[in-house]
Length: 267
Length: 315
Image (cartoon, rainbow over all chains, first blue to last red; front, side):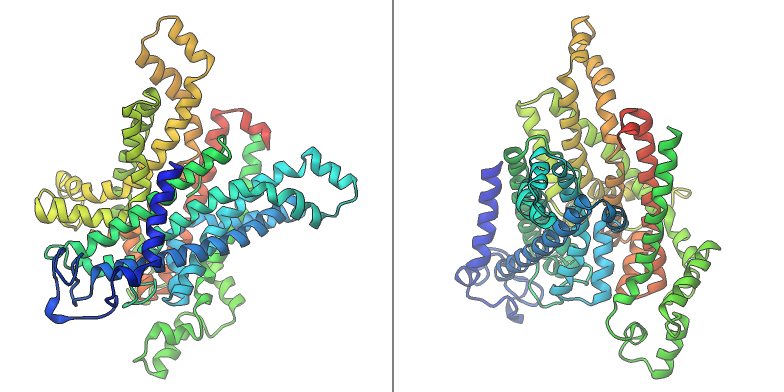
């Protein structure tokens, strides 16, 4: 699982990095004479869309946007989730207020809250990252907190405390390093959710605005021509599925390697 | 048990209060003057000023919040700017569609999710297990939005077996209603089927390893009876806890699926409101959904504690 997932993800990353090498055509260049070219055309190997833009070019440039959004969401949700989870787990006085706030944020269906936040802030890539980070940071905080709660009372932590170590030192040196395994697994799944969510947000018009080549925008563009030109919708869907499948397999594999007892009950 | 129930009820109160506060504050995230943005570029100053009063934006945040809570207590969710009618009324009108779609998808989720998980666990490490788990991981990886469009292309446009969208009320034509909801329900269920199948499998494997299962087999009970009665009965208990997650995922899903299949449900109402910045509907819709989910999770927790007494004493 680990290997297959890693390979799938590497393919997507390579595709994103080598976008210009794969096709020299600009993802936003229109050409009315070659609209709706089917896949296999000499100019457009994966076809062209309703205004003659190259599907392959939009696909590989869309990979960049998806991976960029995923990376920044993982970083932001990871940092914020770790900080909140560590504080709530370590300091009993903070646990109630912090975790009840996280519970309230998690009470909203994830995608629905992300749509509402992104729409309020205005459609842009940065706002998609902010919305998804706000949605997935609480879920990350819960994972970190659970781990910190266990470690806080571990004997080696008590020993460090008796030896005169301060709270900040114990957290940084003894507790957080032991949270990395569940955190890495959790963030792999957060990356997968972010890629799926980008598609929904763009599809509903609250993601990076057109003509930005994103997979969600491509699905939205192709939707009205699904009869005449199904490839416009099919290609980005396959790309999303491969990326998310790769991340899910990677997450499952990492979980089995890092901690076989850990359960995922995150959504 | 009474102590546990009381503790769970009390701890839900601050969460519900925070949920209503977050729902209300969404409009404050709009940069600049929300009234000007909601009214659009072509609005005159007088229209913007009217809208500001209608939204209560001429008053300070705290005053508005207190008013909102007061209205909530009397069952008033405000008035939609777009539909020119009470939010509660608009939601009540759309709710049956979403409930019908959700119930259909939930049945599919439980039957196929639990089914795939049980079969995979009983046939652990065989090709049957591998097929079930491949279906499950694909289920959580394929975007439901895309799957829905794929279904429309294959089964509605190309083969003509199902309508491409639209809603038929159950009262008028029960069979037609089921047919019209079949593609949406399958697209909506897939992700939760995958999730539940994976969880059922690991819960079943856990139980199948235990002594009482071996005892049941040893005393000569038929294999299927042991699997269904002894193993599944116990494996279902931890699965109760994921019902909240499954419902939450399904509500996120209805937002998308109702848009793809043009179903006049609550999800589409909220998406339209979000796209056209009808904030009273957004605030009321988010608040209702999140509060309902908090209550569902509360019931799930109490049910779990009732089924498994160890939980009550852990906290």
